[in-house]
Length: 194
Image (cartoon, rainbow, N blue to C red; front, side):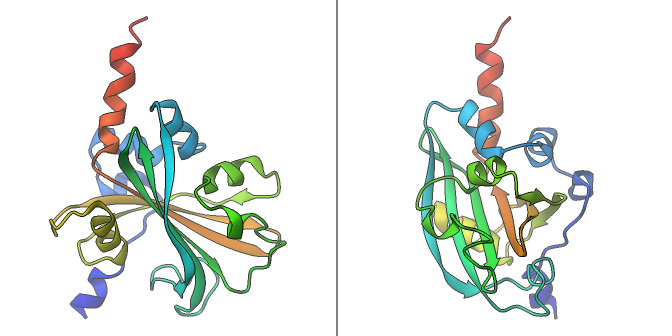
């Protein structure tokens, strides 16, 4: 039973429920496009696609995307890099029942930003943000560590997720904030001395 609980996150509707440090709270609770904010705080923003494939959704994703239990989904995982440093590990799932009409660009994103397409599409409806602290045993914490080459099992990751709807389709985006994202906050304050 304990192993199963480590593989699921407790998602909360308010950021204070996960008790992040103030700098991390600012990233978790930010509104609008995360891609736009990261681009504004770096000289070179890049989406590094890790994979896009058919997979099983995670246990704590099934219900939000309308599935009775974990099943097959389209899965996309990327690292968002600012000036070469990975700052966010992003994980997206789309039920196999979604059609090309629901999410026309999803299959052709490559290394383009999903966030940019979501925020530019007037047919997309954004749900409420949910927040979690990912324990070491959670699959997304393990995947983030693997993508970073980080063997430290006790790293705490803060994450947020949001459900998007377009026509009849749902799409769940989870953003796992990596330690280097905090460094981006200090950069603008040293250059903007007005």
